[in-house]
Image 1 (spheres, rainbow, N blue to C red):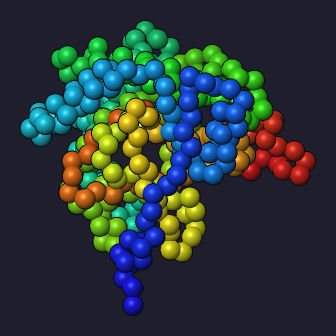
Image 2: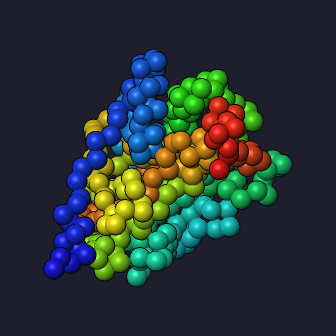
Image 3: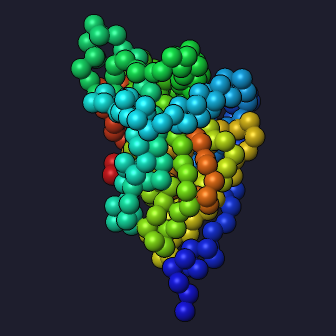
Length: 300
């Protein structure tokens, strides 16, 4: 009789994801992107314009921070503005299957808003409590990641038969909720025992842009209702970033585009990643797009 672990191990394979060239955003690129969004909502982007130097500096600063003693990291614990440090085992995204919190620690960096801004009191806006030497590096990466996401947003709009600037507009992304997270994973996980690097979940925002250090770990499940669930590894490609759509994009598209469940599995290796989470303006209303509904396909 197969154990749960044997069943899971027997179905793990590598996912074949579409690669979108942002330097060649032609009609074929839009069609390729649309198919990727229909299939899983996960894809790669290349020629994104974030230099290797900027990427290396961001990872270097991330590793330097996580190498600090815990007592130092706890001095910048995450606050009510969702800025700062989150320790190991702090988050449990899949409480039904996790017996303990995620085997990861993180650091939140968000959109900078001055104290006299009308949106100062909103969640996710405000100052960042970054360490000495961080600000230039992290602000640069944050700006570059936002630029890439806006370029992707134009292609997504075209793929949904909307004007290219529909999402990249002042009403949608004029003052977006954009959060950069530095993540460090360590240890060995075992799904059969409810131990994960990150438990299974889908992202609730618009899209996520992920840079990794090349260490395997990210897995996706295209059909969360399958028994047993089929998990596929997402390979890191040198020079490419991984993109996944969130629940908001699934809502905008009336379920046409996928917000796919994913998780992280570890094998006793340190793993670092830098996801950038993009959500629209705080007062943006999320509702089904007119091109994604009809009399026979009402908004879900």
